[in-house]
Image 1: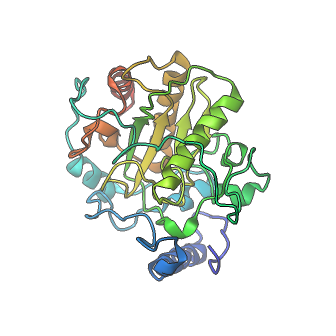
Image 2 (image 1 turned 45 degrees about the vertical axis):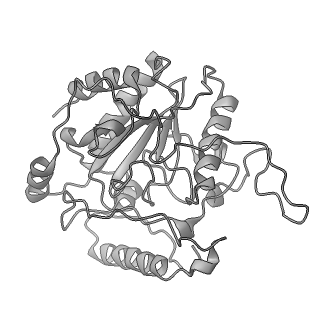
Length: 314
């Protein structure tokens, strides 16, 4: 976003930097609060909706995600934060394998399918046939995990930063599937990239600033960057605050996740927990959130996910 200070390298223990980074976050939040509705076509909303109720697991002193990812080192939150996380963790049902609700992979109506539409003669094209080469413009910020393939490889459009909310300190992780009727069976990089951009265009069609998930695991087990960790995701209604969204590509009401996907999912959850200090009890599938009327991430992935979570270190 124009007018925001550039990213600053984090050095743990540097109090001067900490103050500057907090100032930068405040400036970002204030800038977002004063975006004019006329800046958006239609003017219905100025950005993606914030959670109606603040996450009770977020406590004073927690570092923002960008402070953790910039240095590549762990940040220890303190005993008070750990007690809070343990106390407010909802119960999970590891035997939950079915849900009599819609199979959408994301709240509301899922990624909208891309249909062929003719643009008005005077309207410039908004998508290109291949990803743009300007990596910084395409990414909008760093990935939740540094080893994910960068967004610039697959994205055919830059995120609309003005529609997105700053990411708050991470307190939870949620696993999804795409739930689309058009099944993906290929593992070629080009087809994987096309599929990920399908999610992005579907989410942008909803008026969101970008793809809703922070990380995507394709059929070959490759990890891709989705939305930058600098910004709150859009993947669990009213539960996006401090919540990292991980999409496993496929419809697991119908097909099975691959062994490569499950191996990568296990590593992703372990790495996210270590980097962001997330308690084991704060790892969820989409359907496990109270009020989520969805069968996501599908019965077949739900069973495998529950086993992966059980095997995670406490």
